[in-house]
Image 1: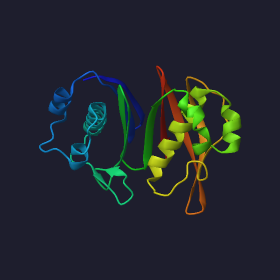
Image 2: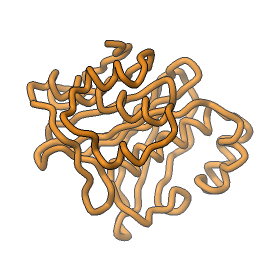
Image 3: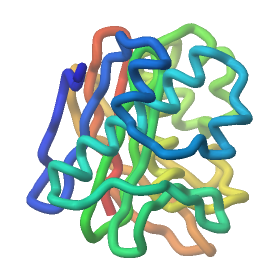
Length: 210
């Protein structure tokens, strides 16, 4: 099992990172589902299939670690994944990595992305003018902004949220691992959060806790 990182945030929450080395058949055998979910059946890209399975294997590992039983994953009316009303989960993947986070009590979000120039080219679509000024031409910093906003978006699990207008990250000094201050405007109310980010080789991973 290629879990290469497992971080215990506290007694109720932890996350892990999976490095995909297996083929699709090997991953399915480990996941052990009795039937193929419809959302997997709709995936045609072979890499996306590996990411889908590995992210759920990551979640299965966490759920078992926290003493719970792994079961089917559903989506709520906003498309946010869940497997029980009592627990909170979030999934992420960017080949060759997949990740998941589990929280017994509080909403949470996780995201993972590779540092690449295109994050600068499309920055105007997900960053405010102040955030663009902070990023400048730093693709690594743009990657932290992107994953932080994605994690924040996943945590709140709402549709019609603009990354540029409703999600904000305070300026920060880029480090291999750090914490950024974040704000989400939900139903016209400002909600403040802290987001932890990590460097994973050429990738950044961000987690958002309530």
